[in-house]
Amino acid sequence: MQRYFVESLNWDQSHVYINSDDVHHIVNVMRMVEGNKLICVHPNEGAAVCSILQIEGSEQVVCKIEEWITQDIELPVKVTVVQSLGKGDKVEQVVQKGTELGADSFIPFQADRSVAKWDAKKSDKKIHRLEKIAKEASEQSERTSIPSVKKLMKINEIVSLEGYDYKILAYEGEARNGYSETIKIIFGKVKPGDSIIVVFGPEGGFSDKEVETFLQSGFQSIRLGPRILRMETAPLYFLSALSYQLEE
Image (cartoon, rainbow, N blue to C red; front, side, top):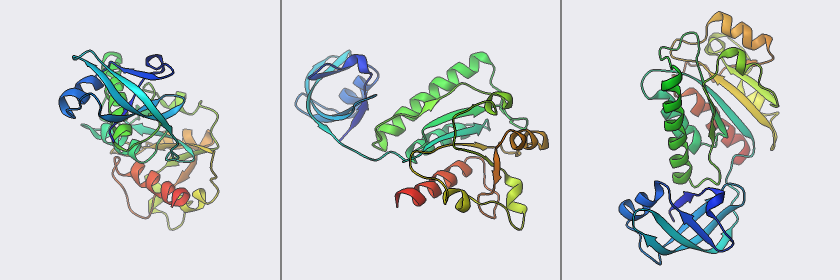
């Protein structure tokens, strides 16, 4: 059943009013008509099966709440993915696939070796684009929440963030060591309800100065297996392994 996230202001006790870009998707892409059912997701109160009462042109779709449903499909830990900027659409790939794999939030990171550079004007447009990708990926993967996409941050802002049980640096240099802390060891300690922030580097990896700054700020350096992964692969490896550890 098709799923749509609807802002809390568009709900009352018995109806949901869809009036965003989703109207086009419902009417022109899915070709739904009055009487068809869909799932509407409230930001705070879960998901409900709804039936379409009225389609008001391209402006609004009015739905009746049929029943609330209970779904426990979110990753049992909160994972914030700090993704260094990369070439092309690599950050978009990470947000899309990372959302499917259960990430709770994303922070774009202007790393020393990031080829891409976002100025203030470009940053606003990029963040809006990433938020849209996260929403669509959440609907596709039938999640009950949409990951947040934070503003572009520099290293001094990231190391100042608080409230995490685990602060992890996915450092490619650790893959070259004969033995280093692995995600298996870390994940063996993680329990439901914990929060994790994990930082991933750009194509050229982290600079020595960045590694030093993160480690001095309490981040733990780990390897993601013995091989060097592409920047867009590393977050997906991490999230997949965590899901396997906690959900399967």
